[in-house]
Image 1 (cartoon, rainbow, N blue to C red):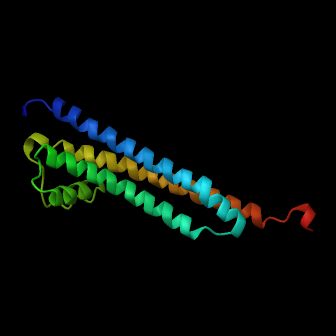
Image 2: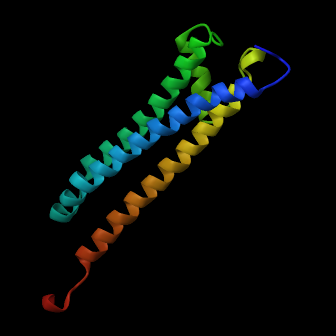
Image 3: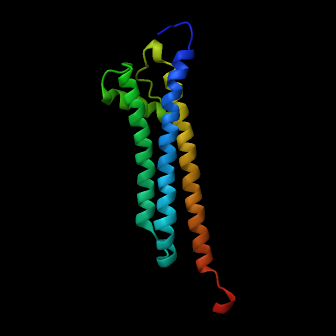
Length: 153
């Protein structure tokens, strides 16, 4: 890869970043679907839906792991990291912005690290928003269910 210009590296890094965002969109759509079609009716009927809330958290985790898996496959595919295990470790540390500092990518691919971190920042922001939305909606349902209506007096 040409060491003089980072354009190709940035363009190649943008493709998996977009893929990561699309994976995340699919995952968060599934979380919302489970909440709207399964958890809300359960919550309204019984006042709790712990199993569904646990399933939604697990879906969020699986979504993040799928994105890290995708980045790992890219790193191995371009031969920036030799083994998938090392690629997964590197991608997970970078995606979560922990940045252990135990290694760096080869010079031709170093700009992929910020791209991985950007995708993680996007994803964790989106997940936080989704979780906040779900908790807010559940709280509103609980509040409405606990409210005393004029006919109940």
